[in-house]
Image (cartoon, rainbow, N blue to C red):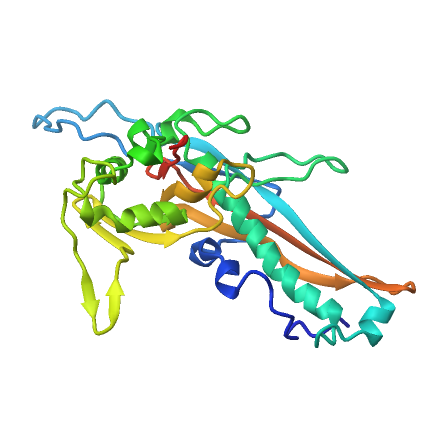
Length: 327
């Protein structure tokens, strides 16, 4: 039997809010993958054309039903955690009120596993085909799905990639409201709708967004030449923009502390933004996180956790990204 996972561990250096995973809570849950690789199709509509047919003339020029379809592929990721404690520590230790060290460590690492998953999804991680005994499978991260150029592994067909205007690498020191509007306009034009977009943004990009009312849309956030909209309610001073309404749709901003968390520059970790449609993404579980205690062989108690999961993008064509190269 595993220790009660509900045991209250010591307070962690990172608080509960810092361990929350907003992307995992936002992603729709799909069907379990039945293979390590999922193959599916992405389709696009034709552009509008002049369409007036003469009466009495046979209809010709039939178009193939699959003319615009391209094959897509997503991969699983196999993630693990391991916990161990010596027998005397587990049975006779009581470190600062923690009576169950193994249970406390399991509770902690379960949260850390979800953070690992969120970081992988929000980082420029390329998918990897696993090799038994050597290399683990990796699912592709969102930044690498939203590319205007071909990926190195299982590249997205050019017909399903976002247009250049949906991706900006402008330095964050030159970021203006117009740059965000250009991304949103390109997304809406590509999707041909003003469907709500959710933007997972680094903390410093969120601060810049909060300052948009203070500056002209065409200017960077350096000189106050716009207007200041202050909302004072009782003793509460609001300086937050969580929703941005525009002609091209609504953006709901969510702060993410895991954008580009794995092996990226500080500029990407703090100033990046991923502009997503919820119906274009899916998280699928092969095996949900499950802890198994190893047989006791004397001296120590050990347990491990396994999770198999997959991030799927149905089509990145109408998604967007702000990924500054620097200041």
